[in-house]
Each structure stands twice: as C-alpha cells, then as structure tokens.
Image 1 (cartoon, rainbow, N blue to C red):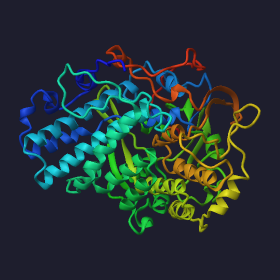
Image 2 (image 1 turned 45 degrees about the vertical axis):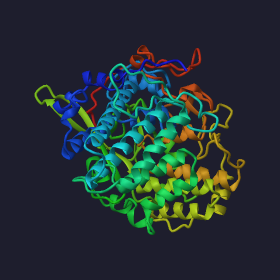
Image 3 (image 1 turned 90 degrees about the horizontal axis):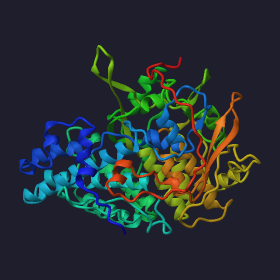
Image 4 (image 1 turned 120 degrees about the horizontal axis):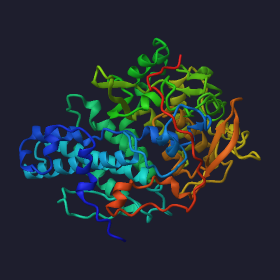
Length: 546
C-alpha cells in the first residue's frame, strides 16, 4: 500500500493552530519529562476526550433528515455539502477536518499518558491501572469513531478495504503511518479494549465524564456488535444492565412531568445524576441549534413527514407515540418543519460579551443503558434468541411509554409483514417504518422472524438515539439504501434528488483535504456523484421558533 507520509504534526499538533489549548497541552508532547507523577498523568487524560461532535454530520447524512427546499434560507454551505453526501470543503466546528484533527490530537494525548505510565514504572498502583485503562479505552473509542466515519462499515467483504491510521505509540514528528485495513483497525481496537477492561475503575471525581466501568462495558457492547461478535456483545451488555435492566433505564415518565421548556428537558437529559447516562462529553458544537427549537439549520430537518411515517410518531408494532411519556415536539410554519426531542442543550460561551461573540457548546450522552439494552436485543436476534430479544424490547417499551404490551416475535413478524418497504413506490420517495436490509453479514430472508425482528430493533434504536448520530452507522452496517428528497409545501415528498446505493463509496466520509495534501490516500469516489447545489444563506442561530 502506498505510504501515507502521515506525521504526528498532521495528525495532532496541526490542530493546535486551530483550537485553544491549555498551556500544559501546548507544551506536550515535546516536554514529556514533566509527566512525572500520577496527578500529571491524570491531568493529561482530561484531554484524552475530543472536544468535537459527529452528531450533526451523521444526522444530516442519515435518513433522519429531508430537504425543505432549495430556497429555504435556514442553512449554510457546510450543511448543503454534508446533506448531499458531497466531499466537504467547508471548515467549522463540526467539519470532517476538525473531527479528524481533534480525535487524533486526543489519541496523541492517550499515547503520551500510556508512555508516561511506563516511565513511572508501569501500572503498579490502583490509580495508574485505572489511568492506563482510561487511556486505552479513549484511544480505542476515538479510533472506533474515526474508522466508522472515514471508512466503510466493517464486514467480511469490507475488512480489507481502506481503514485509518492506528496510532499506538508516541511518535517522532517524522514518523509515517499507513492507513490500515478496516479489519486490522478493528483488531487493534479489540486489543486495547481487552487490555483495559480488567483494570477499569470508578474512582473519579466526576465519573460520568470518564470511562467508568459501566461506560467501558457499554462501549465494548457497541464495538462487539459492530464487529459481529454477538456472544461478546451480550456478555458485555450483561455487565452494564445487571439482573434488573428496567431499574437503570431512562425515566421517560419523569421527563413528561418537567416544565415544557427546551432548556429544562435538555439539562435533565444530560444529568450526571441519572443512572441511564453512562458517559458524558462536552463539545464545541451547534447540535443544540440544529436539534432544538431554532430556525437555523432547518433547511435539512427531521420533519413531521419522517416522524409520522418512519419513526417517532409512526405506527409501530406497539402502536403510535400516543402512549409515549415524552412526546416529540413538532413545528410546521414559515420554512421551518421539525419533529424533534428537545434533548440536546445549547450553551453559548461568550468570549466577547459586548460583541456577543463566542462558541456554541453542547453535552453529548455518548453511552446510555437504553442503547446498551437495544444493542443486546440486536445481538440476541443475530443469535436467533428471539424471546430474549423480545423481552429486552418489551423492557424498553415499558420505560418509554405507558403501553402494557408484551412484544413477541410472532407479533413483530405479523406487523412488519403487513407493511411495505420504504421507497418501493413508483417514484422511490415514500416512507414506511421498514427499509430493505443489505448487511455485510448473513441474515434470513425478508419476512422471516429474524428480518422482522431486526426491523423492530432498528426502529427502536432510531427512536431512542434520535439526534445522537448513531443512525448513520446503522444505515452503513445494514446497507440501507436511503434517498435525498425534497419535501413540498404540502408536507410530502415532491422531488427525488439522489440515492445512496448499497455499495456507494460516499458511505465513507472523504479524508480531509489537508491530510490528503500531506499524502493520505483518499477514499474512492465516483466521477460525478448525483448531488444538487443548494442555495446558501446564513441566519441568526439564536432566533427561536415559537
């Protein structure tokens, strides 16, 4: 494979010119000898978590968004490119360039912490063992995000395709790194996870902002699900959920009793006091605007058509959202149409209060018990333990709604076989609650118990993780063909713009231009992808929709 000539300067240190770091980080890793105590290693690990989010990009790229018109004023060129699956040339806090650099900078900090632990004599104390585990898990998680963003989904047919560089040591500025194969990246992630799990602990001042024990096993659950090691996914989920999963799921009924206010909802959603929240992370991001009651970024939106026909409010095996404790917020007026959960906080840090300039912030729930439960249900389905999967789905249903239904494989198969597939109409635009699945692993035929149970769990996950960016990875894993379409004034699809086919190379985000200029092998592209140009316009992101 062609050498990438990929240096640490490009991977990490170049990011320092684009972001504000502490004096401590500005000196690292050149002044490595200063890491001469457990306390200093722990301080460095605060920066082992990236300060950027993949949520907005993933939501816009997935089937969780539609276009509300080429002349809709509430967007920008960045969103136009992301939504149209174009190679992004715009740079902002959400861009692929920023994600690439921030994640590799965090990885460099992990590697420095690991080297410093060895220089201190190894992980001989409980504190250093926990620090080593945290550094390994952060390194594994960041590579996991990068490979799922910038490569195709893992499968037997793609494991030899282009992955990403896996940085596992502190490197001199002249060292070069090749893009590994996807399968080799996954093998390295697994190695880091397996080494870390026996050492992980919970003795942090604020454990929900660190890889605590449950968060570590929740990450392992998701990883093994993606790696198609179903037994291990179940085993790790068991460590998170215990013998009574319902006791630690999100209390959706409590959400329904809060003041109907986006700030009240979102602040409760991210509370570190909730058992369901396993790992939280701050980010410089406009997620709170895009997925909140604002007009900005609503050119592309999870609108009422999607909500009513595909997910939150659509007819499912359990009925509609009428029994949900926390119902979606909907709005349809003046070029703004959305169907959302107000769960993403929008917090603005003013650098100049007079000029009212600064940075938007949010908090991400990276891992939760709800997602872990549904990941276990998916693994059970792949193991053909349908009764166990149905039990997990029932537990989730009873937490999110007042429904008393017991979900059974028979009920699921009957319901989904009564529904047609998305885009099977003559114009390939109309929505239903199921899509054709083309995963890179074997599943039973359409209409089978396994296929219909997968439809059910994927829908439940889509609802539970709405606005979290995880749906895009499920679209990739299951080879779902999705469309770009325009929603008309009557609230229904009026124009088909593009289709993302099963083997479309645009499923892998393009490597940032700066990195390609440094020698990184780019992801392949078709000559002329069918993407539409959109009208660009900026608006005040603080304009709230009443």
